[in-house]
Image (cartoon, rainbow, N blue to C red; front, side, top):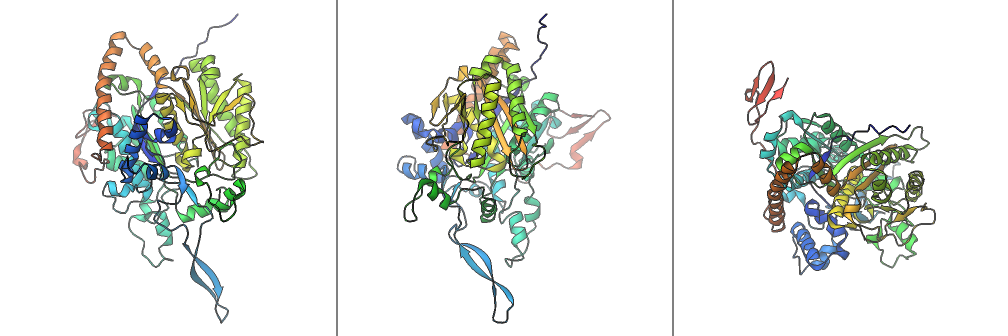
Length: 576
């Protein structure tokens, strides 16, 4: 006899705010997303997108439109403080006595393109940066953008929860390797400089979380960062999700900031043959040394490609439980279903992919089916692929999707890859993917892999539909998006994200009609405040949150009892 299902859906983790900065611009209000799909926007939307970028780039939205578009997304080097055509290095030689010596020489980088922040934008000019490494400057800007996007003042929100019900999980995969971080510390002796007091401490990989706690939120809650190479963001997202599900936390800020565009890091990945060089692009396009290279198309996921394109990005999301979202009227941008992580087992090469990603995607798909049913999976889902633009990735990742589409009986499964436009920011890659997924549900458009003109011959394609052009979708009929990430060393992670439309339906079914209408009334005001933030930012009237030395807590600000600890400035105590 058939037994009824006893499956109970876990509690929701609401995405109530998001923000950041990458090569497409500011993330909040879907501005970065709109830059990616700029060609299919209407004139009014294009004008607002240019305005958002002009504010970052110190340009005029109308008169400098060509410069705005040219100075964003993947492009030739144009927004770095070092010269990619004259990178200094020590060349060994022998003097007349046969002694080994070194002399300064300069060389042109083989890699001549990257996903840089918009040309002219410098996060250090937006607040008193005090020689902070670039990744931490981006953290301040990006986390501030996410918090301001909420439409509720942080000082108000935090009074609705206990201090220990807040967490921040954020970091970077590479750490801070520019001259203000570990890079400068390691170079100091050879460069004839002294090590500063900040370089060692500020170079740590978990420092983005520390900066958010210390200078943006003033949080005394849980903190930390997991590191999993290119899957790092999804590792942190899993930690955030587990915390919310357990009830230990009610508000979690999760994200990553990665600033790897230094000559040393570029050379390191180039030495691994991981990056696409100028010469490789010439060979792909059969362009001789006298002709221009199309660097805009340097990243070509699932097409004829020759390596990934490095980029920089800082993305942050504010997650809450559904009860807090209802109580405060927070906007629902979507919800996190679940995140799965698996290693590859024994490996011949640390960088080669293995079987772990089959497991993470299969688990995510099976769990999504339990949550939302078979139809949502088979006809209402699509994938933001890792899509790194390497020959190995296009074969191995496409085989995963073909195998699982066949297993779950999915036809015409839509696959896209945002690295085609933004490049690969390592730890932040899957955060970029999530930002783009939220944009699709807002605009009913899936961004296409427009840099790939046709699929490579060795790409698996049975039952799959690779979205090579920006494509219309129906958000009401597309409740599921899978975020997939593959990292060096066998760090595989896959997540499924639920649309805001479906999330709201679930929330509505869990409360009374009266409570739902009260939530909608509160949300109207929250949306207005969030819109005001966006308008002020477009007009150049908002600044990042940076609380340096304000409201410092001392031991005398704590009141102890056997039952709890109370902190001055917080409404709720911490139970013991």
